[in-house]
Image 1 (cartoon, rainbow, N blue to C red):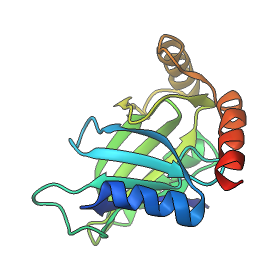
Image 2 (tube, rainbow, N blue to C red):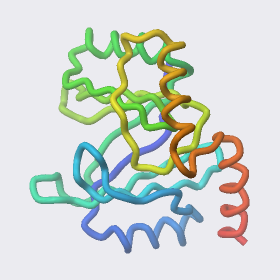
Image 3 (tube, helix red, strand yellow):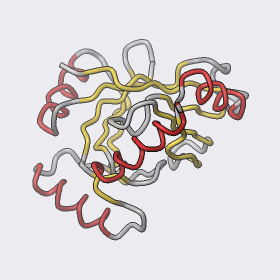
Image 4 (cartoon, one colour):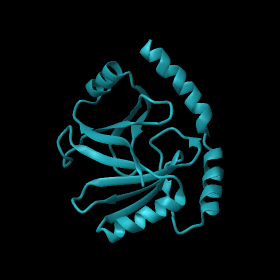
Length: 179
């Protein structure tokens, strides 16, 4: 149904964690900045040109779980229709606190599972947009309307580009990092 694609962890040592994953696993930073909805500094890393990020390091703030605690678990969906279908199943299964975000590079729906864990289900848009980025996502709109709104919004953002073009440059960075 959905493929596990990336994880986010809270950290008290973001610089040390970044250096660790760069050195030990050959990952590279794709983006870093402050989140829009939860004011935390986030560093996105990947070891694959096919994924914007496989690991998100979330700088811990007062009230957050301790460093090393899971921030979220994310599952990639095939398309917007599967995203809606899985969202309905999640609601039937007891999930709460649904929040839709258009990250530019993905359409994401976040919710809390019955244990309170943060879960993200998403599908790619075909765009690269520097992260963190987040506009509201209204899944009651048609697929065509969501795509049109996204294309119009993203085409006006400096540095946004087709994901395949960005992935080629990322592949070269990864090859260099591992040399």
